[in-house]
Length: 316
Image (cartoon, rainbow, N blue to C red; front, side):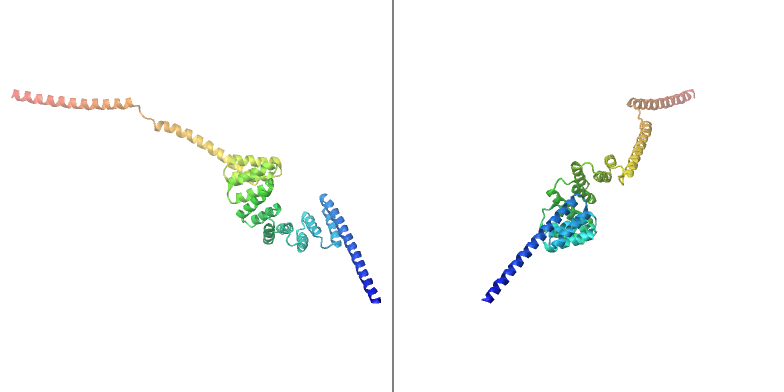
């Protein structure tokens, strides 16, 4: 009987401990959520240091809080502390290994560190897990472009724009890779699409001008460069001075050609002058008259000579 009571008492203690631990854990989770929300508020106000401090408090209460590690990584990215961001995202991925969003964020952190191969592997996994996430397709294009794999980058940006066709930055990046492949007409379409969505980007106007410059259209290049400068006076396109020089050179060349044409035209007027047909006829008539006169004189001389010979014979 005593043993039976001991078993019941032990079972009661275990249940009580479970309830207490569960309540403590629930309280910790609730407290962690409170800290997470504080961190989110700080993040909205761009107070990234306070946000990280709040996330750290949440993670002390619950080290398996995936969102806490992810948000900590986001705040570190804003502070450009990319290596620490990689560690934060890595902790989150260790808890949720098939989360495409986390893989893409870690890939972006590696990309920012210049670790393009690591970033490529992460974005490849992220895109294969969820091909319909804009950030991953866009980041995938960025890495491929950095590795000079422009055709693949163009394809990735195209996939990103299928998800978000109104993203002017991605249209601009698509234009850049097309321009690097000398697909200038397609690049113009991409840049114009970016400008249509957001017309106040000096960078895009500069890129548009660069393509026109490459195509030899100096006037349109100049218009695009001047638009870029009007949007940002500190933004001086690299090819702006070259464009002005080319236009000035072309203008001088046109003037020289026009002058040479005038001189040549006057010279040709004399060189190519031809007598009218009546003059030719008159020449022919004069020649015939001259020949006829010569023949007539020759015949008269011949007749005169014969006459003189005949008289001489008669006198003898």
